[in-house]
Amino acid sequence: MPLDNLGDTFSDATQASVEAFQRSRGLAITGVVDETTWSRLLEAGWRLGDRLLYLVKPYLRGDDVAELQVLLSQLGFDPGRVDGVFGPLLDRALSEFQRNCALETNGTLTQRTLNELRRFSPGGDRTLVNEARDGAGFGQPQHGPLVVWGPSPLAPVIARHLPNVDFDPSRAGWTVEQVAAHANAAGALGVISVSQQSDWSGLHLHYWASYHSYSRRGEQLASTVANAVSRDDVAMRIEVTGMALPILRETQMTTLHVEHAAMTPEESGHLAKAVSQAIRDFFHS
Image 1: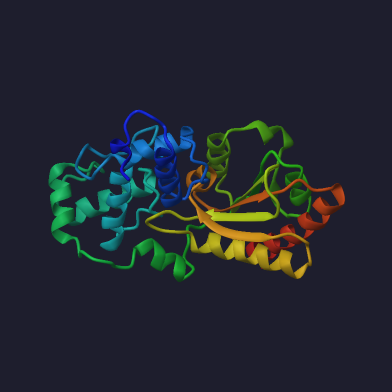
Image 2: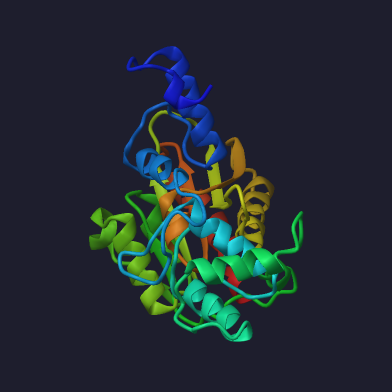
């Protein structure tokens, strides 16, 4: 049921619609319109052609940006992953398209540029260039440290077992935006985000996935960790899920978000050893 037909009462039907939206956008399904859900609702209102799109800080975000990324990627121009964020890679891809079409090369989606994009658009499903690149193993080169972050007692234990790690306990209170900016600026090899959840049991492993695309490397990392933990006979339920949580969206490299239940120090040490060994093998083997 569309949200604009529900009146001004937050009813059970409204909550169901919020949950459906959260599910479709890879967010935690809470039925609560928190800051992240509200910002994604606003982004969903933009359609390609509603506004000029160009590189500016803070970056423009919206479904129109995601559609632009898809169109360029289908034509062989690499805007990075389809995440609805107008960053430097999209600016470069759009400029390259304009240059190939003898348009003014300014990285701005004008009406003339949009007309050319739609004229050349293949229509229907077509492999995106970034997915083909990732499938062939040609991801964006990263040579920096492995960033470990999160308000969890498991984070420092995992960090101790990893080489070339960037971990600082004082960052536990950092926002997602601060962590992502730090990792992106450092050209991090990967990001491991860890949080403890008091209202569930088990181990939840999340990689980037949206309604347009997903991280093949992220899925492989999450599956590698899940297999390692299950082989190590850690007694807990393990779930691997693609999501579009802020930490997964804002970081430009392979990122794994780990959510776990409260554990004893002995359990934490055992789990951290299995998780860190899998991460080390994935990135350094």
